[in-house]
Length: 191
Length: 191
Image 1 (spheres, rainbow over the protein chains, first blue to last red):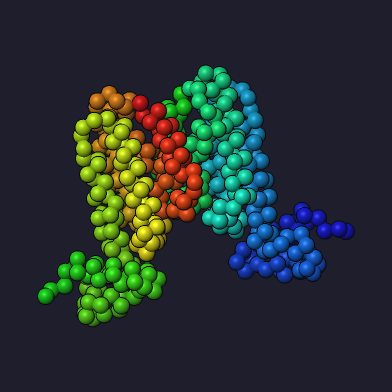
Image 2 (tube, rainbow over the protein chains, first blue to last red):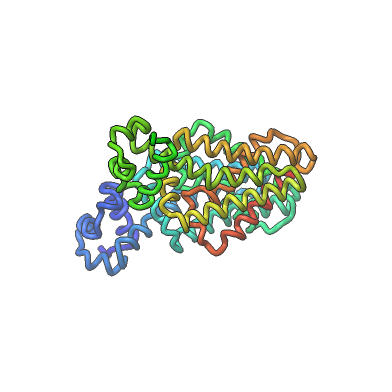
């Protein structure tokens, strides 16, 4: 059976979860696939590239993909849709930080490196926000403006609730109240 | 000459800057003051307490103190004053991250611990924002509301520009443009 990218990523994700990103070597992943590490290097040039590819797939499947469903809705209040979208993003981040600690730690590390993959992920999320804001602008629910720029601002202004560097703050007792207050200020700015 | 708190903090800050927080011991600080570490422990119960006290004084002197001057002004546009205050906070954080890396790293570490000292520092900053917002509300420049809650939202919504966990993003080419966009959304929400 030929070695597919998905087979490698499945094995890599499993091994990374078991040993953690620091202790996992490319040899460990090659072993679990019963191939030589030379074979693996033909698909991924480095352990960093492999780690990034695993994180990219995880972000697509766990965060950006599911949120696409909310952003794709074109009915009802855009404000309500945007709040739901943000709350879903925040809930996902919190849940993964607590329940999928290894993958979340890997994602947090990749975030610090600020490579092109992470920029693409953030762009994908901002585009989802922009599509909601654009609909709200067209409907006259939001004041007119450049949807992309406003979406970027909404994303940045809510980072303390979804950026992985703030994960240690998400267990705070006031975090939901804080988000509600920030949301209310932003919504007031959008309208 | 009796050992004062300020003398200890001066020595501790010097030693911490020289060796970095991880490599500094209470014994190093005691040596630089030519006292026994027992004497030092009578003033500060632990290395952590000493490190926190040094950071607290640094935050007061370098951040909260100087900003008080801007917040204390009661003339002109409150919106303009709030923008100046935020820009000053952001500039200070960026400058210290680049030019006073040891103290900034210590402050970033203390931030992760989220102890009462840091809460007090953040509260002090939020009170300064609240005083500006309250003046703007009284003058009818900002829409009415609870100044403290709105101030907290403004602080949280701008964290990607001043929270130390985001320091690695402050050299981005778009950071000034990003702040301008977030500020414009927030201002629109305040008015």
